[in-house]
Image (tube, rainbow, N blue to C red; front, side, top):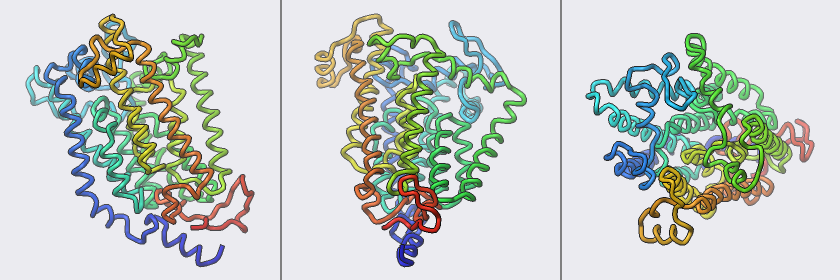
Length: 481
């Protein structure tokens, strides 16, 4: 490659190819993106209000599709009695869970909010806990949107608005505490795109301390750094990740071991959950899924096979894939064969999906699939809890067109269609990302004559290892822009 191409790769690195400083760009867009995100979060809060007014009565929450874990877990996990996550145990009838079953940073988040609502009266603390949690989650959503926009380069406004205006954010923001890990992961990616690998690693370590799934992002970062020969950046990132994770986890591990390991034991022993593809396959004759060990082996084995394929794709693609593309594919590979796929897990995918492929048609189709599943799961649980057959497809469509919930919920078969709607649309979006990797000339981001706006040290870097072309360091060149 000529020296002029090398200068081009250097000049565009970290700026999204437009020569504009990322911080200045974000400063101009921040008021718009923050305001839009705040509006959507407020609408999400209003969507939950019909259930909040009834203190989240289960039948009403499933009928109106406004369920949240936040309010009931305040009581079920003993926070109302002053119990400290991991250090204090509790007993729940019919359950083997005796400590908070979330990673340490999420449990710490719950404890901080429990402290904040102490001044409220005993009868009001539960609702105060929910409202304060919702406010903090909304702030985390704003941070996630701004960080994702920062990592998007010249498409900052488009990408930020796609995340902020997504129906998934409106509907699922307050179901659980997932936005803590989502925001930390997005901030880690923004720090990486700003060429601050140690900070990126630290933020990623905190994200892993909040949820398990950000651990998967280490794979794409390592693979792409190996392909580009960015050993020092990779080492600093890994050191930051390990240090931050240990900083949060080690005190709890030392002084509350039984509470700390609850999350890992619970995750291993869980059976097939409602949203998993295994729930559908079990219903259609697949045997052995009631055996937890067999189920874990099947899910983990499928993920490892998919991950190996993604690794080969990453190292052998005609042009080094962009970081968000590989991160998105690895997360999808983890979720598709997982035994648990809760409605709010769509938030995990959201920032990466728009960075991997910021085009509306497939994104809108995927969001439609998620909306179908969101209402499908609650209405199905309504029929299960009420022990009634639920509406068939015709009755469900008729009720929805009348802007009403199906009487008695939906049938088992209709729920199966809703589950497949989400599964297939996610799979379709992942397939399009793979297609973009195999045909980089059709990549919507690289069509702007940039390399990898979120790539940090990877942006515009030379290839050192390429299984496809077998180029050594002497012959490798800056990708043609």
